[in-house]
Length: 375
Ligand code: HSE
Image (tube, rainbow, N blue to C red; front, top):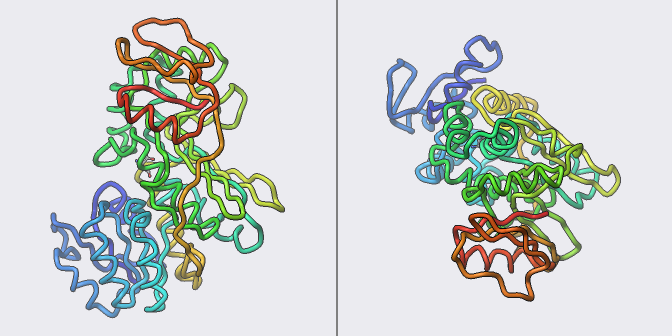
């Protein structure tokens, strides 16, 4: 099998390295603006016009020109493998339709869970079971930061800098710490798991940007750790989905997920819960998942999404209690929303009466430097 790689950054160069000694898959071309090897090009038509190239691996990231390049490759009959969750969560339906028209494969296992074969197993589970719920810890960068803050007392900034150095963070790490990376991965899992295509921006999402030592200490005193968790539940008509920092008791599966590890699970009606944990980010684990997709193409697998992929809206009727910390001097919460006032230090902290995730989102929008988590 001959392939091309689009983008020789952290993940793309990992794929290139791992395939150097591979007898089954040959890297014939690499597209990158920094062309320095003879197989490299800056011209996509060297790839789309080459009938010897069977599949294209996209590791450029971003939406544009990744989307236009993806369409050109698929329209010229190439199978398309990507780790780009931003691209798939925004344009997955268009790319899946184009792949079907052109009898090309469109796979993206590495776009959710880094090195973990989560989406590929979720797709298999969907064909024999009804997926009721799914979620997990889907971002390595934020898990690394939270784990370091809990276990080594590191500051948020120091832990984030380490995660960047280790190659876990996105080029713009705000998409990690604001929860957007997790939001996109959750949207992909909903599409693959139940054929419900959710626009990422519709998923209520809370990040960890404003977390402080106070919040970590509060969780520790409750014998719990904070993790950034994705969650989706599929009713007959309604779909609940959100991304939020959440407290998990010591001894729970989530509490044992350390450093950049991910924990991705689903619950099937027949099988109950299945969980996968492993390297959720990083060069070689992610590259290995891409290569698993290439072998899937060799075996004749063509799609992760089901044939029917309906765009749906998220509903948020369920009520939960939240921990909310507001910066000192900021407006307080309405009395009716407060279940408990926690002792004040340099900020005001509350446990709320049950409210919907949308109501919690409204508080965050009104006071953007607040920290909100599910307890
Ligand atoms: N920035 C992502 C993470 C990379 O930290 O999980 C893997 O998708």
